[in-house]
Image (cartoon, rainbow, N blue to C red; front, side, top):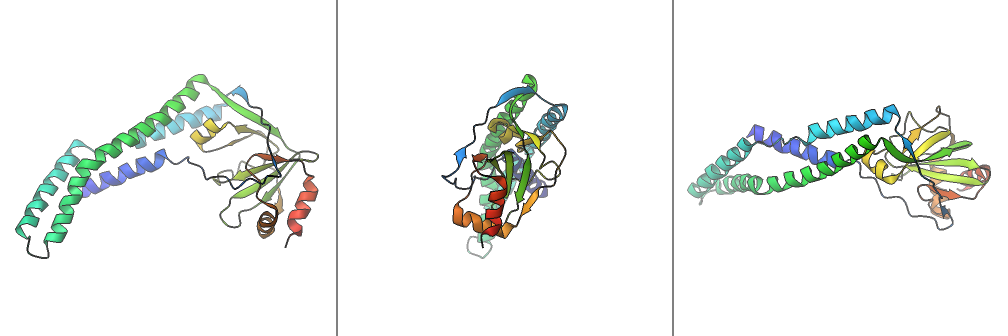
Length: 254
């Protein structure tokens, strides 16, 4: 029974892993802000990116190994049959309920787990095929960003960290960090933004190309108050606004 429980737990881990790169939905887009005109260009992978892809493939391969063996179904069948028999013998006593419940769970394992394993394998196969595609091609589409200054408005109420990036005079880029995985790598003044297909695969949208810089920090409560009053900028949206003026506006809202 213990081995059967462990096997079920491992399958659940495998299903969770397959869906780990699902991102949060972006906040509502403020209509005042225009869509960024991103130009993606193909480039060869850096060695670090190739290592990441191979590491992901190896990890997914290990997680996707079928942890349910044929003997687990034999055990489940034996448990189901035994407790069905016990439930029949105790049909007029209190024990019919726990015995019957265990029998139903064992039968449910036999019926439903193969279907869930099939779904998990299909999802894993799709991810593996994507990884193979990028590893074999050795090419990824990115958009290069060169910034002058960067401001950080930290999360206030589970909305994510907001980076306000000054591209040129009176030209800003908004970047939401929903996954909280940029620590130690960002902000920096030069970086690549990955296309959605690759980003959804690895769960990381930025590849840093320069050293870390210290951002100008916006009070998180001030950020929240400003967004409630003026609207929420969209992820990877641009705005024709002066950087210093916007920071002043953020901090000036009570």
